[in-house]
Image (cartoon, rainbow, N blue to C red):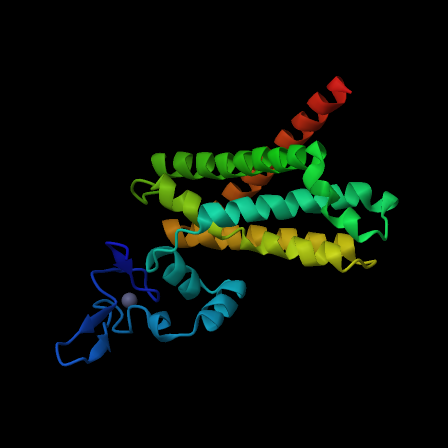
Length: 235
Ligand SMILES: [Zn+2]
């Protein structure tokens, strides 16, 4: 478990989430600041925690980011990149779709697909770079007195909060007329989760989180445009 926990209600630091009495009795620790349980989610089912995280509840984000040692962010990141590459690949090839079942696995042989994974990775790198740059600059400046910023913790939070990208695959597989709308909703959902993750890690204002995510988005768009220009120059 993490060495330093946080109260999910008031963000105060805590040394333990529960106390284990020798006679087999476990008792949830109460926060010294707000007198509420430090982390009520340790008793909850993971599905409830996930639902609260989908609803962008601050408490659920604090539980996941501070009080768990989930280190699935890199695996999740690779999976999300594959989902995004599949979306782009499938949109490009939707006009030449075939009913042949063997066609479904054709993409594994195509270099184009791996090129799209690389492109998605570069865009994600640009996004995270933009967000971290703004937050680092804000923390360093005198306008925000939040102390030093833990870049590893922030990067983990950003990658974990991109989990909404997994929805891209069902959105593409269940083809329908509202696909652009669905993709828009997924993008907004992922950005909202990113914002909430930034807010929880830094305990900062909504405006700073929004500003950092907007700069990240701008940086991502610029990276995508640059890649398109470079690709066009080679064709
Ligand atoms: Zn508290």
